[in-house]
Amino acid sequence: MAKLDFIQEDLEALKKEGLYIHIRVIGSPQDAWTVVNGKKVLNMCSNNYLGFANHPKLKEAAKKAIEDYGVGPAAVRTIAGTMTLHLELEKKLAAFKGREAVISFQSGFNANLATIPALVGREDVIFSDELNHASIIDGCRLSRAKIVRYAHADPEDLAEKMEQEAKNYRRALVVTDGVFSMDGDIAPLPEIVEVAKKYDAIVMVDDAHGEGVLGRDGRGIVDHFGLHEDVDIEVGTLSKAFGVVGGYVAGNAEIVEYLRQKARPFLFSSAVTPPDVAACIAAVDILTESGELVEKLWENTRYFKEGMKSLGFDIGQSVTPITPVMLGEATLAQEFSKRLFDEGVFAQAIGYPTVPRGKARIRVMLSAVHSKEDLDFALDKFAKIGRELGVIE
Image (cartoon, rainbow, N blue to C red):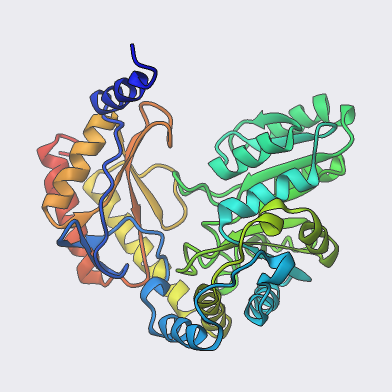
């Protein structure tokens, strides 16, 4: 047996189990209707919550930044890669979030990898929600701290785990997603904060899917619950509702300065490019001025969810625009996704390991750019295929 034969065997096993990922290729801007694999389809699965990915003001800002700053920073932030644009973005994000300071990174994934290992190490303990995002999981592993998983969104289980473990370690960190990306539910942040206070633990929230969605005009889950004084670290992404690319950490000035000195992606990876940063600034400016797009997102969310429920679909426990259409088996989810695509709807199947076995689904992502006619079109196709496959009556 050749040393790399296992690769082909594993790939074949994924195909047999319905878990092989077929990557579809986008041939146009991300918008309500998008060209995918050469076909124009209704886009129901991107993270473009507010339509910023193809917004004219963001495109204009990116073009101007290329003229003023060029296409790349050509260095890490700490050597020669920090441009005035980076500082402007961080200042505006801090004001938008109502925090003292912000440090930006190349991605939301990098923001978690940067922050967790900088805060805790071998002598410390991390309490992590069992459904936290992969970037949190990887950041926890890199820290070499003890990792204690608590039951999903369960502050009582967190309290029990902290009672057992926290006193045995130098520092304790409690970390949770704000909005859980596969189910669309929200962390019980006020209760988590109360438990963490009892043990003097650092509280960190990754609000990748809450930015631009929850809170006043999209300021996120901490603003939604009014916990600015109680949550130490807010991690955000600029690649979902903000429509571009990048990540950031918001908190007090001391934490941000500490990360500038300690965070490895900040120290050892090139800065985000000028056009990307300029586009992010434009997105923050738009949201600072008006919450109109956030209101439209929620209007579309309510309309689509009510339609799916009336058809008889199981859309789980979501309370956000993330709408999981629960199907169970991965093979069924893939077949459903394929038929939707044939009918002109782009909505991807999600299976193991992204979600547990037996919990496969189509994950629908609503956007402010969808019209009522778009949503009616999607509901009609879901109904047609749902009946054909015996998912609904």
